[in-house]
Image 1 (cartoon, one colour):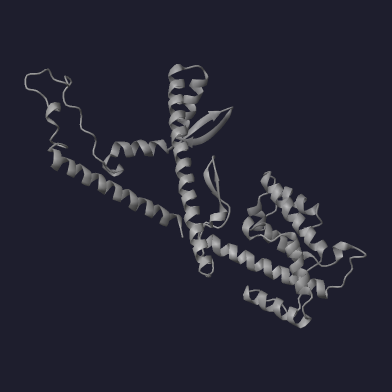
Image 2 (cartoon, rainbow, N blue to C red):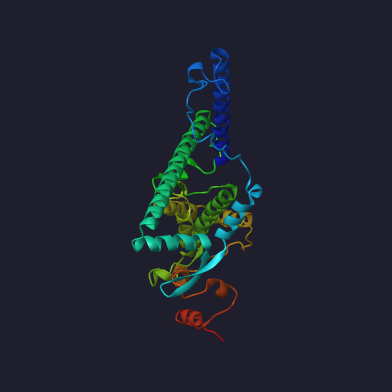
Amino acid sequence: MSAEKGKGTSKKAKSVELSQDLQNEITQRIIFGAGYGSPPEHTRFKKGAPSPNPRGRPRKALPDLSLAEQPMLEAVLKGADKKVTMREGGKITEVPARAALVHSVYANALKGNARSQGLIGDWLQRADEVKAREIRESRDYWRTYQRVARELIAEAKAKGESEPIIVPHPDDIILDDESGARIIGPFDEESARKTRSTIDYRHAFILQAALDERLMPDLRHDDPRSGPGAAYEVARMMNRSLPPRLRLSEAVMIYKVDLYSRHPQRWLLKEVYSTWRKLGKKFKRGQLFPSLGWAVEKLTLMLDLQAAAGDGHLEIDAIANGHFDETAREFFEERGFVFE
C-alpha cells in the first residue's frame, strides 16, 4: 500500500462530489428556470433604473494559463532564483534574489519602517496559515492511512493469513503538530529492502556471536576485552538502526546467542556458514570474529570520526579517497596509526 494509492482514492471521491454538484445545478435550472444565465425574476435589472454597477462590467477573471503562456511571470520566477551577492555582518554570500529581497524587507522592518513591517506581517500570517493547513492535511491523511492499513492487517490475521507488506508500516508513522507526520521506518520499496537486509545481517551476527562463544578460547578471567564479543556488538548496532517495532530487546538477543551456542557444534558451523553464503559473504567454515577489544577500538574510532566530521575538523570524503591533511594525520596518529 502506498501514499499515492491513498491520495488517488481521495481524488476520486472529490470528482464524484463535483459531478454531483453539477447535477444539482442542472436540476435546479430545469425545475425553477433559474440558474447560470437565467437569474430569478426579482433579481434582474429593471430598464430605466440606476445602474447597480456604475463603474461598468468588472474585468473577467484570467483564464487558467500555463507558466510558458505567461512569459512575464516566467521571467519573474527565473529572476527570483538568480544568485545575487548579499552582505551580512561583514560577510558576503551568494543567495537567490528572493531570499535577498525578504532579508531586505526584514531589515527595514526591524529598523521601524511601517510599510515593511506591514508587509512582513502579511507574509508571516499567510505563511503560518499555509503551514497550518499543510500540517492539518498531512496529519489527517496519514491518520486515515494508519486506520486503513491496520484494518488490512487485522483482516489478514482474522483469516489466518500472513501480515501484508505495507510501506510505510502504520506503526512507523508518528503524528505530530510540527510536521503533521514523521516516518521512522522504511518509506518505499528500496528502504524496505534495506531494512530486511539489516534484519538478515543482525541474525547472521547473532549466529556468529554464538559460534565465537563456542569456539574462541575464554580468556575473560584475565581480560574481558580479549574474549569474543565483536560480532555481538555489531549485531547490537544493527538492532538499534531498525525501527522500534523491529528491534529485539537486549534480553532476547542474549537469549538467542545462548540458545544457538547450545546447539550441536556441527549444526552451528553449518548454519553460520550457510547464512553468510546467502548474504553473499565468502567466509571460511568455522571462521571467527575478532575479540571484544577489537570491536570496542573500531567502534570508538567510528564514533570519533563522526564527531570530528560533524565539527568540521575532518573531511570524510577526502579520507575515503586516501587524502590526509595535517589534521587528519594527527587524528589517526593519536590513535596508533603510523604513516610512512
